[in-house]
Length: 308
Image: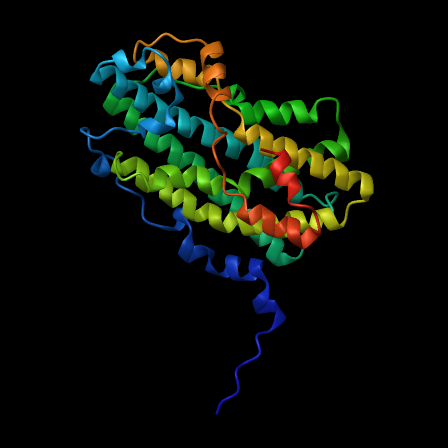
């Protein structure tokens, strides 16, 4: 009987496994998706149950065309928010972790993983841009735009960093990125599995979701190494920022949804949306990957509850 081969420590390293498979698993290495070929004008662009403005009083009186335009604008908004998260939170954190002054794991594999993640995230922004371009053209919504600073999570990061400088500011930015990359899969899965919507939108989101499952591992590994190298006060700063990040990712967006509603001629205000959001459970996010890291670092899972 042949003895089982002992797996070297090198091969047990999760980042090694990810970086070696990168060329076979990520969207940027696959053939370009034929977006127009997967566009079905008869299907909605976004699931109705994920659009809060359609739950407000008066929405039931909207005709089919108005609801369709609102759903198309919701898809544009979703992509704008996704791109803002990548550009304003994830990419800056990746670049920070490449700097010598940040005490994070810095072997060749870790550096490879960060550069691969940066390439992935830039490609995700391009995927969002291209998909939205088709929607704007096919749905006649060329003027629907959303500023990156209008999203609650971007505003939450700005608030958490207010008054901070230097290393503390860096810690907060990285902690927010950890909140994003270890909980975003659930956010993406809601669209990636929505069989009733536009195939183009579902497939694009699923490609993104598959990449993010790998990014969750990268951020767990690197942020874990960072946390272990912090002193007690810095670790508290990191934990508090992580709570703030989780809270921000679960916070309702208001102004963007007013813009979405307006595309269907539905006039609402942020007060109505705020009341609607307060009366309903906070949307769930998959915190499983984050909880694995908290267990490994000896941090109570109550932190996730606080972030809710």
